[in-house]
Image (cartoon, rainbow, N blue to C red; front, side, top):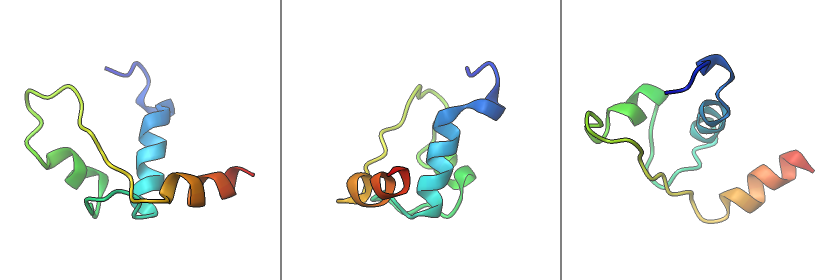
Length: 63
């Protein structure tokens, strides 16, 4: 549980990745990501990046 969700860095990274269509599995929204698969008894979910997304997109924005 995140004490202050407003400043949760993971949330911001995931939202940016959704906007950039950076995951192998396509999601149209943050809510869709949380609903597939059923996450009732799951503590975490593995999201795979598309090839080249980490180095190409993110590194260029930071530099």
